[in-house]
Length: 417
Image (spheres, rainbow, N blue to C red):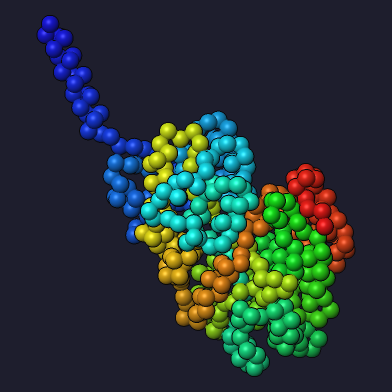
């Protein structure tokens, strides 16, 4: 009898402990390490919601996509995933993540109307809202204000066209003894830039049906860029190594008056002290266009703590969470109201000052090529560079691009133009 009493007392004690400890644990995966204080958004969330603990899983960037796919197939993916653009649709089609439409609709913190236009566009393309961008980066133009002043050329602005760019590039190029000592523009060093510039020439890159849509715009752009590089010699030629494209940063060295690059380079160029510089949207061709880069907060369809997972995502997308994320990684928020507050800005002694360039670009930028398999888009960039170097004809580049897209995506996912 005494043993029974002791057993019952222990059992009651364990039950009471269980009732007292009602902590919910959610697992969250990302490729970046968590930022230190005071920008650790996971720590801030746990302080605000002490009944929810976050088990953070960092997966190396090189392994990230494949690792998450393997975990999803095995049924043990994290509750909250930050998915890359090209993975989002695959995870949705496989049923590995849940739509967030109703969560956002019922949220007192978030509204779809407060997100940059590309979020709704992606939602329409995929049928549902499967993820929310934790922040974003895009591609813009950089320019050396001192060189523009010296040449007496007005600074680039949101109304610039490719004609304005070409005229300025010719005036800003300096040749001494038959050698170019200052280029009007640096070479394209980042793969995404090719798609952003091709997009301004009219190609949709990814159309409304999610199909690969590159053809005449790419042909026209490559012909024009070839002439700027080889005929007029106002754009620096690409430098190629066995490992891919390696372009010296002539802009940072003060040897190129303009350059195109990701918005993340503002945090690198802020250390420039030799000249004044600033930023502007990519010039307009047939239309304005630029590429967006991000990761999307998504919820594992097999998660047993979906409501807690949503609470974490909602916090990260709140102004409190976005402020921490924007400041930690120097990337802007996809929420328009928070984007305008500029928490991401990091200025150096010489620039940038025209932060409106980021906001203007966000009005027309899209998740174009980033929605396609990296193996396809990276491979095409090698052909683009080869064309500019005269190693392959531009017509052959377009033919090969279409055939590669059909092989990888299937004919039904390649637009017929």
